[in-house]
Each structure stands twice: as structure tokens, then as C-alpha cells.
Length: 290
Image (tube, rainbow, N blue to C red; front, side, top):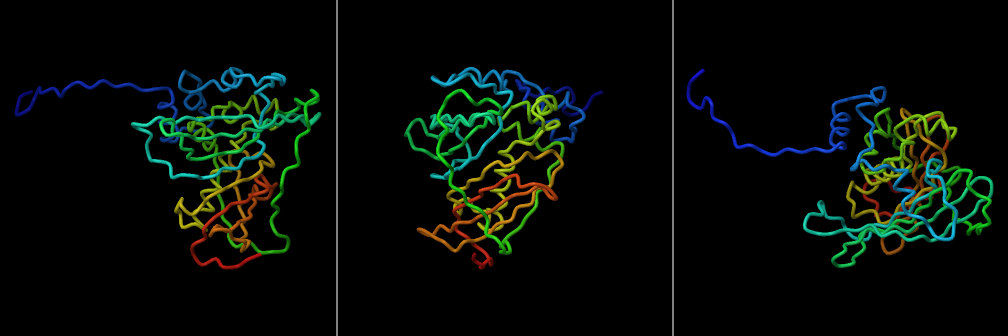
């Protein structure tokens, strides 16, 4: 075959990919949870969750089994706007143990402070306080720990805002590619051993999707309008569950930030995020107060 341009070869380009890229591609084209061979795998860049958890030991406490751990509760403070890319800068996660609490037969709570820091300037961009609950791993003689502060929703008051989030079988398989590779959220075996019946969705998926929903409904989708967000992980969410969030304005403000109370339920079922509280600058028409 001949003609103008025939036989011209473009410059060669080097290509590379990681297992994570293949998993993300499979998710993006609609591979489903019954095709787990396309969607699940642990390699160098898809972290072996159990090995990573075991690699660092907290001195003075027992070795806890990360095959039986779930999220307890989480609070995040947004201190500085995060740049859209870390290119040209070095960021670090700096994690500190705040307490390890023996809750007896139910298990052990490990409470952490997790800072996202610009290593060049030591500026803290966000600070999270979180707890992990090691199921059935208590009674080792440790301290019981302090009581936690509760932020219940008001009784007998209609929510100022309600919204829904329909999860699917792909939800945890896609969310895990953000870096949380606990097999509990991808393969049915760990969840069966823990009594959940199979895969459960990351608690942080519900946490973050609810935070996004509140920002949409009350904060005009502007991240500058949320300062703090917290919730307790009260019960598991399974792929396919519909999440229903109810939120109430309190009218209590400090320095322009209003306290919002919320809870998230599985439709027709239990509360999965309790003790919900956010500090926001509310925009829009919602004016009712508790």
C-alpha cells in the first residue's frame, strides 16, 4: 500500500502500568463483584494490609490480629486547603498513638492522631483523630480509657436536610483503590469469619460520602465551608445497601461556624454512622434550628 504518509512511524514511547491501574480500569468499565479475579489482588503497590499492619508494633501492648479489626470512630479537622497535586513537594503522614484501651471481652481500642504534613515546611494540612476496634481482643489488663462525648440528634425534630447514597457491589472494590486494601472490603472470607456474612463496605466510605453529601446540601459544595467532621461507626454497611442521612442545624455558632448534627442509616435498617457532628458555614435556604 502506498500514498502520502504511508509507512511513517511515530516516535516510540515507553509505557508502564501497575496492578492498581488494571484494577481501576476493570472497575471503570463495569466488571462486577462476581468477577473478583479482575478486581482483587495484592502486589507491591496494592498493599498487603495484614503484613503492613503487622510490620509496626506498638510497645507495651499485645500483638493484635489485624484480621479482626474494624473502624471505631473518626474526627477530621480541615486546617489548610490541600493542593490538587503534591508534585514538587513532599508530604508525610505522621501518626501518633493517643491511647490503647482494654474493653474486656468485646475487644481493644487503639486511638491515633494522624497528621498530613508538608515535610518541607512542617505545616499541618489536616488532622484526624481515629480509633480502631480489635474485635474480641481484650482482657489483657490495659486501661479502660475515658468516656467519649456524645452528640445525639434531636428528638422529635424534623431534619433540615435528608439525602441518600445507593451503594453497589462495586463500591468497596473501587473505594479500596484509594489505598485501604483490607481484604475485609473485597473478599468474602474475612467477613464470614468475623460474623458479617461476607464483604462489608469501608467505614470510611460511608464517612466520606456522608461528609460530601453534607457539603453539597449545606455548604454549597465549597470545601472552604466545612471545618470539622466526625462520626462513630455504629454498624456495618454491605454492598448494595442504600445509605440515608438526616441532618439538623443547631443554630449554635462560634466564629462563624455552625454545629450540625447528623446520623446515617441503612435504609430500612440500623444506624451505621452515629454521633455525627460537623462545623460548617451554611449557605442556601435551610433556616430551621433545633
